[in-house]
Structure formats: C-alpha cells, structure tokens
Length: 143
Image 1 (tube, helix red, strand yellow):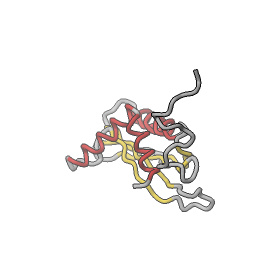
Image 2 (tube, rainbow, N blue to C red):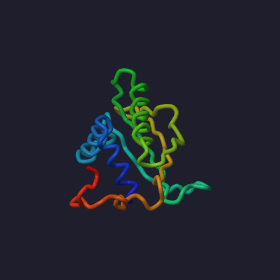
Image 3 (spheres, helix red, strand yellow):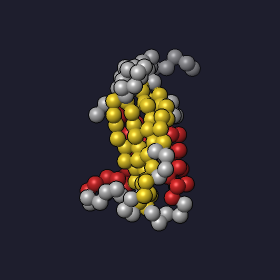
Image 4 (cartoon, helix red, strand yellow):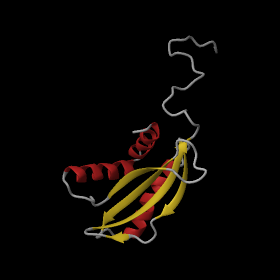
C-alpha cells in the first residue's frame, strides 16, 4: 500500500457517507455477499498514460445501491459526486477521467463506476513530516 493509498483511504473513510459505504463493502467481504447493497468498491491501477505524473495512480470506484432504492441513478450520481468532492479537496491532485456511463443492473444491485487519475500534490511530500514548524516544546516568541 502506497502513501497515496493511505491518504485517499483516509479521505474516503472520514466522509460520513463514503465511510459507511466502505464499511458495508467490508462487511460484504466477510459475509461473502458481494457486491454488498449500498457500498463502494475502490480499486487501484498504475497510471501508465503518456504524460502521467510520477507516482500517479488510477482509482476506480464502483458504487452499488439496492435495486429497490428509489431513484437509484440519482443515488449513484450523488455517491460518485461525493467521491469527486472528497478527492478534489486539495490533499491529492485528482482528475475525473471516466464515468461508467449507463448503470449496470446486477443481482440485487444497480452500479456505476468512475475513474480518477490521482497524484501526490508534490512528489515526495506524502509520508514526510511537515517542515518549518518548531518542536512542540519550543517556546513561542510572539507575545
């Protein structure tokens, strides 16, 4: 797992909606009931596009809702728009590349996916402590 994975995982789990949907996916994995209704399934791939930034990766998020959810297409759009909002808050560089288009209707769920190209904001910054700060025990001179 890379630093980028950890940062993005933290962003997704801190959002109340997305954190719940990730937890639903984890429970579905344990119960061997996949895909879990009302869940998101993230997957990673190397970003091998020409001109892709160093350290960049592709994140695909597949959103699932129950077939019986009122207006499932709107719900899927809301979930994927929430993922986009979380990813573009500035912690990582994110570009939405692809929407899965027409939702897929499976056994018990309706799903749609979207893909983002992600890269660290500055190469090598993720995983390093912040610089320019005094140790916590240092006295302040601004009185």
